[in-house]
Image 1 (cartoon, rainbow, N blue to C red):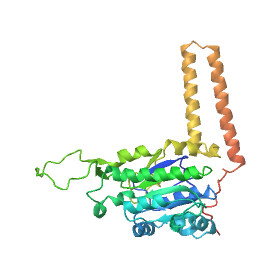
Image 2 (cartoon, one colour):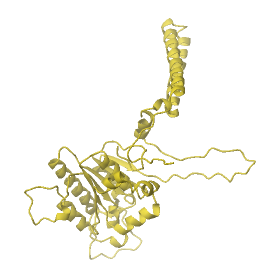
Image 3 (spheres, one colour):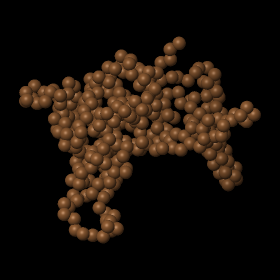
Image 4 (tube, rainbow, N blue to C red):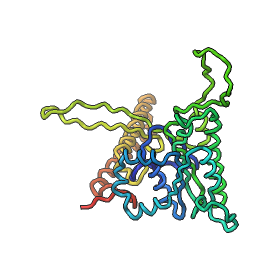
Length: 338
């Protein structure tokens, strides 16, 4: 399964293209490449980022515990060796690298740059923080909305071309850009000779949010949010013990994946949902029996439903007393050593 977090964690759905935006953690691209390539033997990942030093500094600042503990394992190092990282400094360099990417072919021109020839077909292409090309010092009056979208379209076409050459391993495209929501670019190039206008007059339609248009190029969109958690006052010896509060937001897919995972009979969320559904069903039958004046068919259905509820509770109770919940294992999960 492919995920943005250390395993075990909620998996991403099967995707051909994915946009990840918001304040995601610095190690998310590495976990994405690791888990994606690990489930697709014989393939590799291509990672494209504008600033190498900034990316490495962010990784050191985040200090991922999982990477610190498991990064030196042989299995993890083997997967990391299958991730090719390129750091094109400008949009032009990015377009050049994308146009040169190819898989080995005996008919290739000998003059082709060897660094752009991949030793195996990729299963994942990751575009990382493309907004940096268009923000602050990297910004240019020649950059427009189409400048950003052209890079996305170019990467998508490269993924489709390489997928056609290797039909057994289709290529997924992922754009990870934490600043795409705040990035605004003009539709047209700014004129070199500006007409004198009042300084306070500013066209509200001169720039557009890139995220609103870029999301249309992707099958799935994932957004990270900053969740504020209220801090409890310090506890004293006489104060009652409080259960810690955790802020976590799950999408519908993640919730279903958690509930329907093996061993869900031990999941309290799943059990609460079952009890709630059966309780509502019992209330419905009781109301119908009252309104129908004690219809025998409805009373029979009510008895069947109550028996079903009781049998489920008995079965779960016996299952919990007879065995412990099954634990899913994975080669990249942390292993405790004594």
